Length: 162
Image (tube, rainbow, N blue to C red; front, side, top):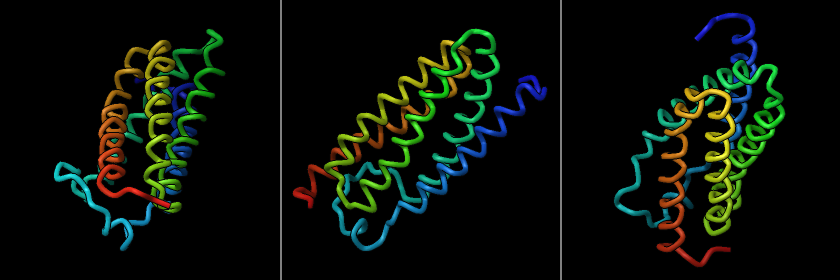
């Protein structure tokens, strides 16, 4: 990484956005009695793992964003990068709201499919500007894949909802 202002500005902006997304997700995630009462598969990651995993994903996404933004200078790819990131941010926050606040894991299952597609889009869009950026996003795809299967099993084990 080249610690020039051209890199530090997108790094700082992406960091600020990641902090907002993390706070929004935390505010929307209520693991109270309703969540504790849900049946969950035995392979569910332990609750303590979610914070460190999401922190790692956010850090990698921030770095990937800055790398791709700098690499895309003069290529015309920046608007596509911006919109791919914006859509992902909205879907990332929305999942927590649908699953936890609305208490609709069934609806969240449909939404997480869109989130997964947005992560794949990020890998392709950012990866086309910077190979490293795309590679840094692979843990995000793996985690959302795991979350998707967990969401599916929770729906199967607890339906109906609403």
